[in-house]
Length: 274
Image (cartoon, rainbow, N blue to C red):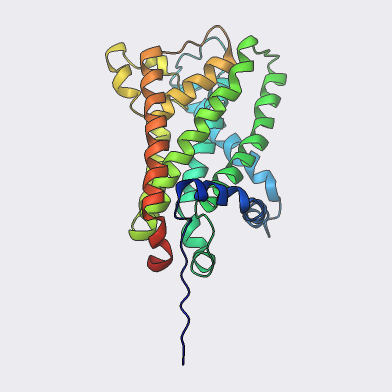
């Protein structure tokens, strides 16, 4: 009696793999749409949570850093200073949280059929990007409330959004790959997100960091992303520390490239480990 063996593997050639991603684009759409629907299912106010969470955090940071500590606001209302950083940070933090668990959450799908596994963490980042777009409504509301009109720099914002997306993808790919083999990362990721919030210039301006420490401070890749967002949104009062921004940008590119490489390297083992 003959027995059949099911082999689940990626396209053997690199070019075939990237063609596979395009071929399975409908699966990508399905996963992203499913996650959007499930995230706020059975909540009384639904997708409004995407507005409430960053808004409440912005209020806390404005009171603590703006009213009590009286830190400089770069010539703009402090809530706008905070929220212009809260947008990219929330996108990054949500992407890490969602993508790090994305492979584990789709274990049944991974173990039964072949498709490029890169589709799964990418769809998780895209879902977080939807929250990012929704949260942008708050920034528009704050600008209207304070009669704040951005300068021409606002047209460069898509560039910094792209950098934020690359940072989210790079870190997300590393964490979701490691989380498959080392389940400890499901406990480490929330700590990293919480700790990163306080060492990133979300509630304050990077300009308060002493000059001699700014380059070292920019080892955190989100420093360059946040400074870029503020430069684009806040106008002439906000300046980018170019050496630090170049360092952050280089680290983002490095994380993104190595994240894809490591993910591709261990991808073939996911079905066995999960």
